[in-house]
Length: 313
Ligand code: FE2
Image 1 (cartoon, rainbow, N blue to C red):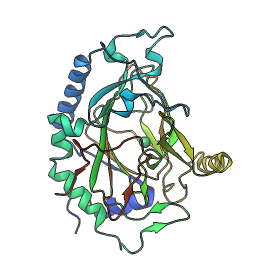
Image 2 (tube, rainbow, N blue to C red):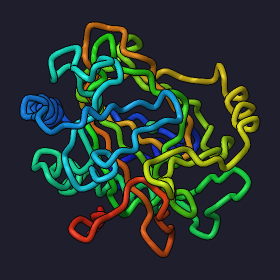
Image 3 (cartoon, protein in one colour):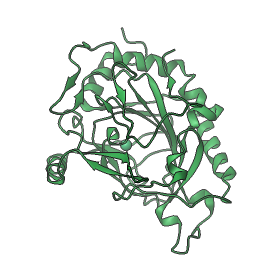
Image 4 (cartoon, rainbow, N blue to C red):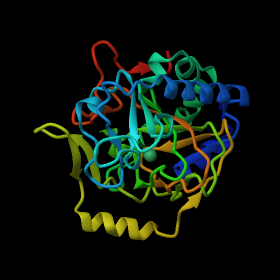
């Protein structure tokens, strides 16, 4: 028997590749994370910051050292529109940050509590794993990994999605960024504020984790920095995108709601055109060896000081 989810929820996750879990955090828990996020923005020290911008709008992804060495730190990444041509901020620092990452779950007690010390999360993780026959795991045509039993926590972020400038996140799947063989990434995305159609709520192409193979990978380049490496030709990617057009479902949510995101499901979010922020806390998990191998080309690499933490201990 499942411990936290219902069998209907588990089946829906399998069918759609994502699942909304209402009230995963109660309002006091989500509010504590929201307040801590705002405090972190206040603590953000612009001195010595390289003004690293985070954008997913093109293939010229961030790839500087500040980004690449952020896996075991708490660092701040700016909205593309928050820095002018001379490199100066165009707005107060707390309204200029796109996201804070990537080791909140390890280093910050408030985020650690809801991630690595959360019995509800462990129960949910066990629920996702136990219902499938492990011999029917991987479909090499679609790259669909039938069973996701996440064991290791990789990275965590607060995404602030600032009013007016909070950028669009175009169609993608998360295994593009956190690749394992076979693909096993699982995203956890927790709304800390109301998410609406105008402030950039997520939308999903239900079932696309079974129909949309991985088309590219975000990797560390041998010459330094990062870039996209093609898995399939760009024409294939366009065909896949075309096939899922018009199939997206917008998922509004309330603070404390959790969205589970299969690493292969297509999703996106529009630019925040509202006057309101859209804070969310998100983290990712993967399967551990021998079930999956973490890829050495991924931008995020564990360090000797901070290996990936086990969820189920
Ligand atoms: Fe994503």
